[in-house]
Image (cartoon, rainbow, N blue to C red; front, side, top):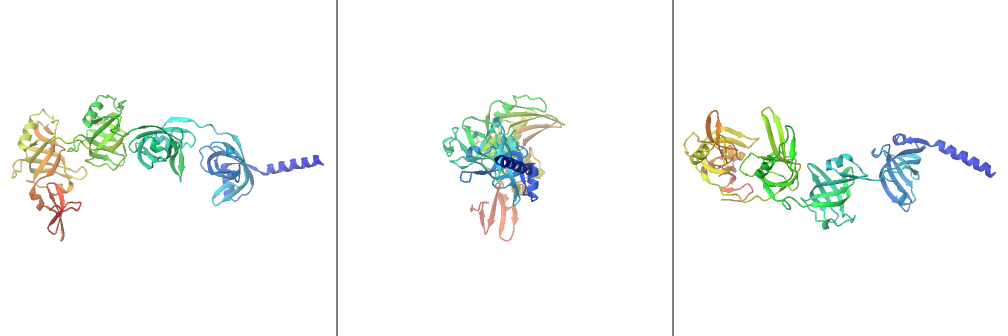
Length: 493
């Protein structure tokens, strides 16, 4: 009788196993969403843990797919699991046995299913240094990457919830542990905004957004200007010129530098690219901050900034011949305090012409001069894109013949609108002996132009029944009810 029962049990067991259909995750998901409640055996990789292990109920939920990086295709819902040590690892190849089900739009194996690990996941490895862009593209939720970036903001000083930036890529770091693995001790690590920090991180997501949870601190390099001496843009250009890349190639220094200078042109705000110069009065930048992470605030023309990174020379070619770009590419940029300006010599137009024409052909002075005189002629109208115009200047307030050419001088749009011949102006820039078509012309190229004509108060830029917008000494004011205010609303007279 016992033998007969054993035989009957064996046949019953075999029958139940035959009834369970073996499926891939994709097949099981399609069947469950189609309403099937059949018994099945589903094989696939564990891609994420959907619900934490319950010691009380002895179960765990996890997502599966047919490939290790296949995402959330099919869920093993509250699968039987005796201990926390038995919880599967992301990357394990498993078989889940149970009843197909659908909860809302989620295909799953119903509660009470069982699982067996067929092939354990490979142990996590350290992939070594990666850029933040590479880290985000890999989406490797198992292995460790070593990341380096600039801290742009700290949301929680104890946990170390922060944003890390490299070039134009930003990563949210959800907690930074000490090298010993201790949490809530970020404020003891000596890292702060503008510092360059290195961490060990594993990719994670929250609400579909990438992050690096519980990264491990490696090292920190303090922010721009702290551990490195600052050099000028002229010094940076001189260093760049020692590099000799082949045509179409670039070369960089082995050393890291911090270059300080004025932003004279925003080339591409979206890509954080700016032209810099030691001269705040020019619109021509001889050094470029190219796609640098801007980590404190918006960058505008006139700002004094520090850019940190390796100096690079790019050797380009074009229809007009070879050219060279001198820059820091992919560095970090922060605002700084400009050095005290040197006092400029103020010249008459005649004196400026004498100095310029004493130079060699197409040679320029190494220092700026301030030249005061009158507008003789506006020969290129205001260019809105580049915020400049071109004039001739003279010492004679009544003349229409100019001795000094001021080409592409930068000027405020509203001041340019009011500017007219015979206005008194001041131009600041380098003097040049411009030689063209066998003719020498005294010139200031891309200088900074301001209006000094007291009579400019009468030039009404905007006029209605109650308010006037006027310009005086190159500054725009609002006049109302006989009173004058600056653009911030403060009364000036």
